Image (cartoon, rainbow, N blue to C red; front, side):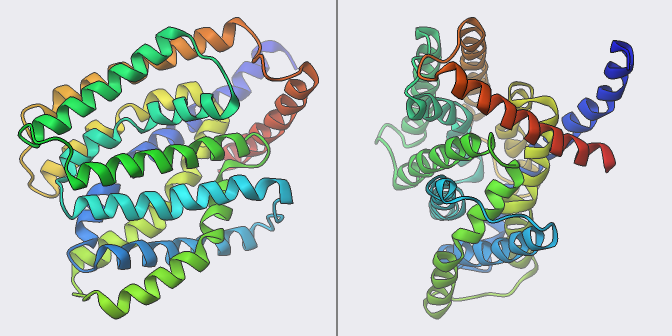
Length: 335
């Protein structure tokens, strides 16, 4: 096969991968409005428990149907971090925050998630990013902190802000561990096993919450809960990770920059919220800071091999990553 033939064969995979990654970002951008809807019918602890139960059952069925192997023992500490951060911690803390804050305000704060994930990933690996990376990261954090203080009328961080920053931290750890595991196994299985591992906690949470929190059955509540379980906590990750496998993390991450801006749009269109005057400028500033960290990270990783890894380890990880990308790329091509 010639180089031109290879390029022609890979082009549909890249196009399909970009479309799936964009679809994942689009799906995640509805998560906060869906949570606001779910809270119209259920309490925050009930929402957290039920979305986790439904997502766990759906993921378990998909893992069983595809014949996915149980991950090795060495993968379970990382999967536990994914379960705590992405399946329990972030859903609970963000839901508690949305009881006290608007969707628009929350979207701006959580817009720091890609930046926080990159920082946690670097620290987790013992890496030393350049000063430009940390300068952009600190600038983004300062912009969001100034926004939250301004929104509180100068009173400082509110309870909702504390919930949101807590959600940001635990989800960043979950994403960073998930990204590390995705080098060794298909990414959608990472979130699949993560939500399955969280089932005992989410089942207990849901059962206890239903006994103390009132339930008001309505269309918004049921629709929001169903979306959170089927899309935000599992289905969105399937297309997102497949897209990353086909086009690579850097290109996929660029698409994720649009997520907070999309959420601001849905807050106005679906929830009839009035955006604070500083919401859009702050979101754009956060996007600029995240883009700056990604540029600094690409220059750094392209300049030298990660110092904390030996050559043999790096080659072994790259071979595993290639096999995972090939498997997911084949799945994209056959769809």
